[in-house]
Length: 193
Image (cartoon, rainbow, N blue to C red; front, side, top):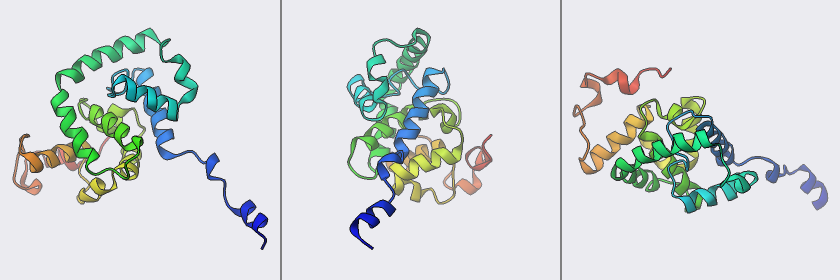
């Protein structure tokens, strides 16, 4: 087989969307549609948000200053709520960063976005505007594989992250020394709907 034939048989990866691109597009659109709990900049500061848009959603870069007023107002309220819990956001962000895959900006951006999602009141996948827990698990596996490996009992992600913080620093209340004897076991491991 000649080199030219081999090149034609090799799939062109430039036309395959990078997983983060797909997830970020969905998360961004869900926020603009008023779904989930993310603030307008998805939990990121303005420069990081602008860089994310330029990298993953460049067609929206021109629209950053001209956005849906309703989405921006809703996002501003969510940003105020995030600001009230900024220390908690940093702890979650740092936990995720310490387990990220590689050193590129995607892991940093995803850590900020997932940390902001953890501050919501629903299942994490819903707070991020994703379709399912499976989709969230795939996002986490792609960006934070070492952290995913630690969730051997398939605990709900938000609960798992706070359990990790509890074990790491003791700043959060862990209800029982063992999940098996905890009275709210099904809140952490039950089926998500």
